[in-house]
Image (cartoon, rainbow, N blue to C red; front, top):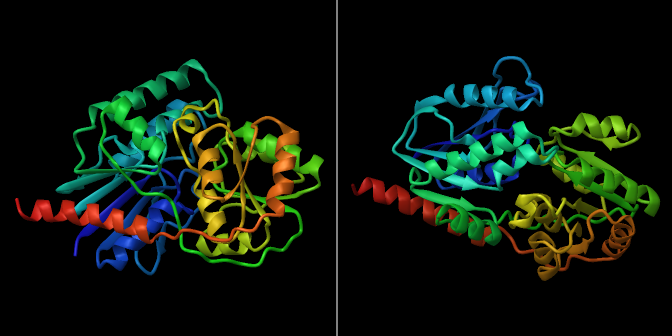
Length: 351
């Protein structure tokens, strides 16, 4: 049995990918602790789950969205991490600053292009500098890891071509938990709220198309969205049980993102699209980029033109009439993940 620490720079409230991997490792007999950064100082500092535990750290005052303050607070969070572990799994490249874990193995899981996140809200000079530094840090650290995972084929190709990183793809599939749809013309958005243009498109399209909207989650654009749309049915952060309850209230999942963003062009696939399919909900996503192509190929929903309200309304109506007949589960992804993990553990034991 290995002692495993997993690190994520969000509040893990929830982080479906990280928690799914923690569960897989726990089910395999390993001891798993997730270390998360509670930026808002609003979550439980310790959450005990059946197969893993989450420790949330509050560093200084609740940070603002200032890039410099975020950088400094994130560094303090990472440097505060300590303990003796057999394996440390770092989630996304914004976790690469120095930590004080004592470990023999480091694994990197690249969910997305973390260096694209600072530019999600605005393309200012300080944010471009931050993005560039994050890319350089990943390049400098690329030999550090015994195993690297990516969350889509497109990201695997991107990290190979841009950084020379070899990785294994583990998709964000989950096992089927189908629920009857309420058929109340309700669209949901459940996850990180960091793309303001996407949220405006959702609200404007739903209003014009006669659909209700439920939003849950948190992120840097949350307050701005609530100010712009005070009428929004906003449910706040949620956990796994909360996700099940939220899914029961919607007919369609919204997962549209600006195709001009680097991570969207390069192959990022939204977790909420996989979550929705598992619950029998079709997804609306962005046409002309990998996420839209994937959605159509796997018959998980409908793709619409980003920024085109009429296209989104048509997609809402088409998805509302869809049935998700089949949903691939997590078993294949679990096998890939655990096989790579056990190979690394075995190689270290034989040294």
